[in-house]
Length: 220
Image 1 (cartoon, rainbow, N blue to C red):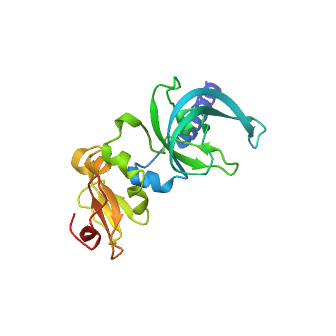
Image 2 (spheres, rainbow, N blue to C red; image 1 turned 120 degrees about the vertical axis):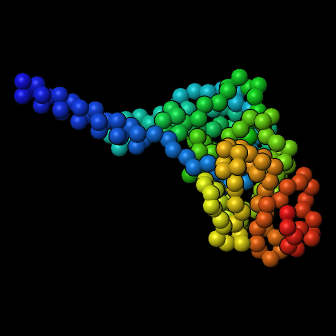
Image 3 (cartoon, rainbow, N blue to C red; image 1 turned 180 degrees about the vertical axis):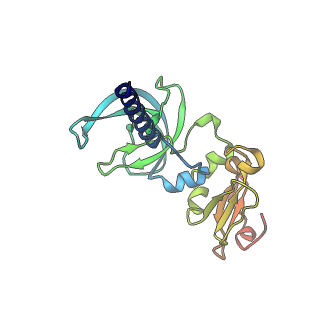
């Protein structure tokens, strides 16, 4: 009986450690404003996904093959990135390790942000900003061409609970979560945090370039 009990305890311990390891490996991301995603990415493109296949990319430290998903894409426009077009994007094979799932029938257009690897290939994870093009607001689409880039020296601080505040004039307070209980609220859809002439930063809303008097310190 004692032996059986010991066997059960060992099995439970192994199961517990396996669950802890599985939880540690789960994908976890901190929400980012679209401007932050743009500024922190190496590549930002508008594209259609036209194919997908599982590929191997070397071996891990134990000699096991490392598998990735390769999405074949048709680039429509590049907003940020290398001089050559992107024709393939790589991601992890499962969402547990931050792998991304995209529609591959070539009908949907996506805005895709990601990182460039040392070999020049583009890699994406669930932590990147990836959205269907038609779901973006007019302001978000317009900001991709210039406005987000002008605010890359600014910092967007996400407010998760009240009270919250900024600690520097170069910061903008992102309050979508506490006000609307979503990270895809008004500030995400319709505002950009841009630098003004005194090097401070402020939220700006509009589809036209900011007026000079706004840049010369005017309340938004």
